[in-house]
Amino acid sequence: MVICLPRVIAKDNEPFDILLKRFKKRCERAAILSEIKKHQAYEKPSVKKKREENAARRKMLKVQRRMQRYMR
Image (cartoon, rainbow, N blue to C red; front, side, top):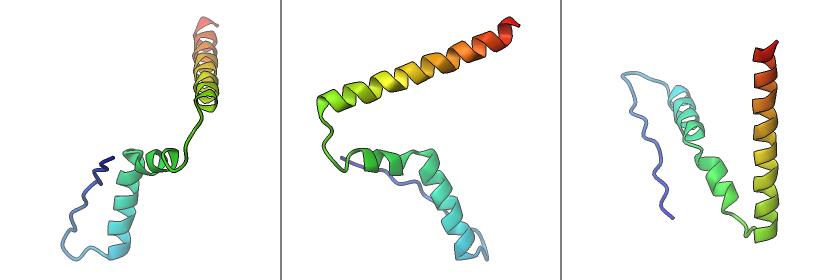
């Protein structure tokens, strides 16, 4: 598994704190940490299927709520 980390180029006289903050935000946007956590331990196929079904169910409920809002 190859992970391509986001690059952050330091500006002139930029403090390290701000540079680190920008790097963390880019990592968060790239979903790198969640991807690493997802692959840390083996997930049984039945658990994976249940998780995906729950995600699909939540997504459908969200779409239904949005549609109800527009139907009023």
